[in-house]
Figure 1 (tube, rainbow, N blue to C red):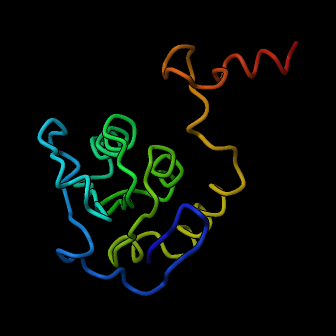
Figure 2 (figure 1 turned 60 degrees about the horizontal axis):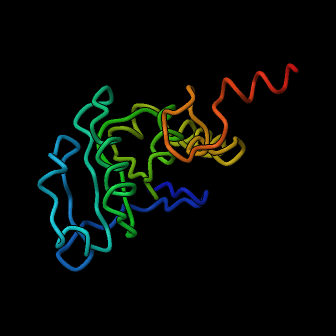
Amino acid sequence: MLLHKDGTVNHSKAPSLSVESGCRIEGSSDPSCFNAELLQQPLIEIVFADFSDGRGYSVSRYLRSTLAYRGTLRAAGCFLPDQLRSLFSVGFDEVRVGESLLARHGSRDWLTAQARCASLNPVGDSTYTEGSVSGAAASIWQQRFQRLA
C-alpha cells in the first residue's frame, strides 16, 4: 500500500525501484556523502530499519531543507501508523506500507492515520519551543498562550 501526503492511496504494491525511477538509501546514511547525482533522482526511497530509529526523519529533513531536493521522497521499512503525520511533516511525499506492516496493523489503521493527517493542522509550520526552526510560525507554546489570553 502506498499512502500519499495529498490523501490518495494506491492499494497495489508500489513498483520496485529501477535506475530510471529513483534510488533507495538507508535511513542511517550519512548526509555529508550525498552528491549531485542523488539530487537528480526523481524518487528517493529512505528505508527505516526499525520503528524507533529516527535517522530517516533527519535524512528527509536534510534533503528538503539543506539540499533543496524537489523530487519525491518515499518512506519505507519499519514505522507505526501513529508516525505517519511526522513522516509527512519532515518532507516525505509518500509512505510505502509493506506486507508485514499491513498484516501487523491492518489497512484500516493506516487509512485512519492518513485521514487524521488531512484533518489536523500541518506539523511543519509550528515548533514546540521558540527558535527551534528559523522562519517558523509562532511556537506551539505561543499559540496556546494566545488562545488563553
